[in-house]
Amino acid sequence: MAKGGFPGMGGGNMANLMKQAQKMQKDMEKVQAELEEKQVEASVGGGVVTVVASGKKEILSIVIKPEAVDPEDVEMLQDLVLSAVNEAIRKADEMVNGEMGKVTGGMNIPGLF
Image (cartoon, rainbow, N blue to C red; front, side, top):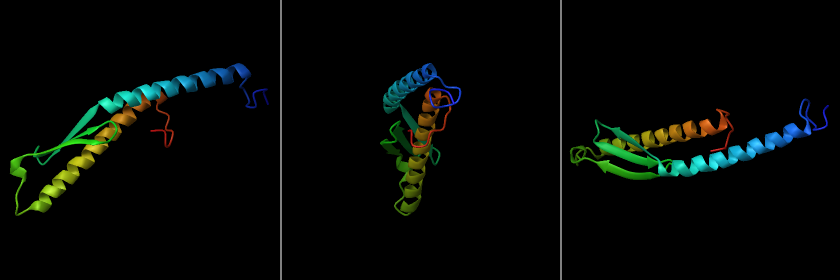
């Protein structure tokens, strides 16, 4: 076994690995800050319900057009709002995963973001 404790890894390679990890951490922090400023939008029901979410997966706004409001069918409106919110969160997840994937080189590290 090599001196560094891992086959094929000398002390210099470990130092390089640590530098790369620190750079990746800084890059990830920068991307996370940028994602907080980005937004995604999801519309359902032909655009009668629109939800905007942030990169932090927070709902920023919900717009409901008057034609979506039918006092006789409140359940449909509830379903539309629920669908739009879920779609906005899904889009925010995609955006976050895409941007972070650029930093991590596509490595899937559970719990990272």
